[in-house]
Image 1 (cartoon, one colour):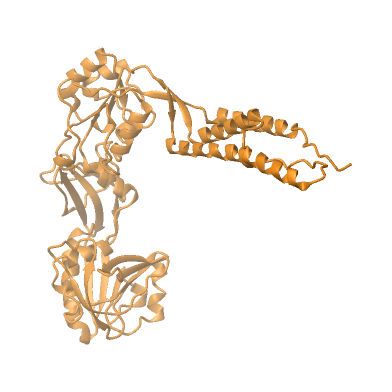
Image 2 (spheres, rainbow, N blue to C red):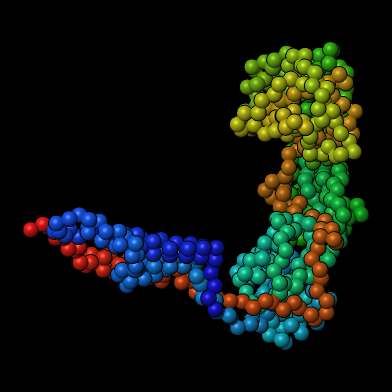
Length: 519
């Protein structure tokens, strides 16, 4: 069956009128006739101009055919051949292996296999499951380590790719409903795809971070269920090297201390490094800024609950000794920061600078991660704040202007604010979200192995209304017919080249017009 990829280009066939007009109006000059009077010559010329008729019809048809072939090439012709219907595919997410959740749907999967369906893993390459792997109890031993530990993200585009790979074959897909696996754009799935989600264990508890202070270990334990992920700070006695860490009421968490690393008993869990110091924060506040310092101290103490270790907080009208620089220095006065302290930033200091100068009245809402609609914050006064290249804007206002910027310098970073916590500047001091905003700065988003540990235990589920409709019984949606396209454009381009060469050859062989000169 012939089809066109760009059928609107066929409108260019109206251009066939062009060679016809050329042939009709491209008249040859009249012959010179030796007569005694010009009266007869003028009358003959008029009769010739009124007598329009086609000449060299073969050349006209050849040029019209050349134009039609070029238009057809632009329209993208293709010959569509139907493909035989496939037997069907069952695609199983590796995250379901070793979870004991496939036993509930195993009878349905067995019936699909008897009907000729192939069972594959939903991962790059679509590897087949061997017969021995299928006989394993609930696929508990069948998933390769690399597949079982693979990230679940981007189910939607992966299923779209599977539908394109197995065109014309019905697909039955089994995955979890974890929120982390539903990233990307949720476009409508093609026909022939039946997607069923299975619930994984509803709650997970893990060790996220650890800090050693004296004879104690300060631990951050994570707990995630289908609704939320929370963290809890726990303090335990530091065991001897090689001894296990005791967690009261959490028998699934078993770790052994080995130097500065906590090694889990389960080989599926990664090791957790133990940090060796607390976070040291110094708030420099001369007496004129004592009220603002009290608000900042209370917010920092509340934010310390989410830190992996304890917080050593000092609020003083004096600066610390340069030889014992803290991890964070909050500079509240409007005076400029001395060059000696700015030089500490590349060495690891995080410098927070309050606005310099009295500021100007400017009312606007603040926009920052953690400021929900029910807890708005308003800025009454601000100072100009630029965000040059290489600077991250952490907080902004409703007009898109930066309110808090971060510039990384070496091992440290420099933070600059456009407003203050004072009541005459903003409502941030009374906002319950201020500790959350400060925690996001004190503890940036996890990366690397820390992020992978968090994602592996994230059990939050996508809302039921946003999930695909589950498959019912043994009914699997039939796949639409698949076709193979044979593109004809290269052949038309070749034909156009041959026609052009033939047209040029015929045009060059046209006989010259006779010319009679007077005797």
